[in-house]
Image (cartoon, rainbow, N blue to C red):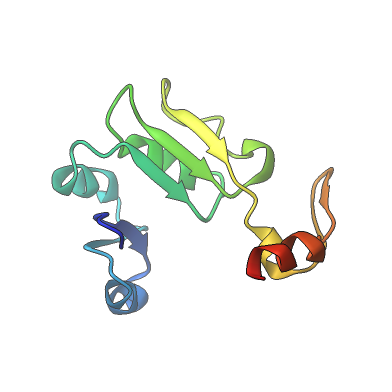
Length: 123
């Protein structure tokens, strides 16, 4: 994983699969102690990538980060569902839908597919 120690959450039924992809630590996202367990293995954790983007995923991720220097990147456009992120945690967002080569809409946000841009990336 390019020198990174990957720590992730998933359902227990997918834990072995996620480990096979290279995750060093895998936790059940429904475990009430997930934040403290992550902090135990990575007390200096500074970055989290929230690939779910629901009402609790970014706030939970921010709680596992080092206070005052944490960074959460969410897949939700407009940083939706990040209102309850820990104070002082930096929040960014990234648009990953462009990889699916179809138009996407989320609330008032609209992203048309841009095959020209995608083709230039792969050629």
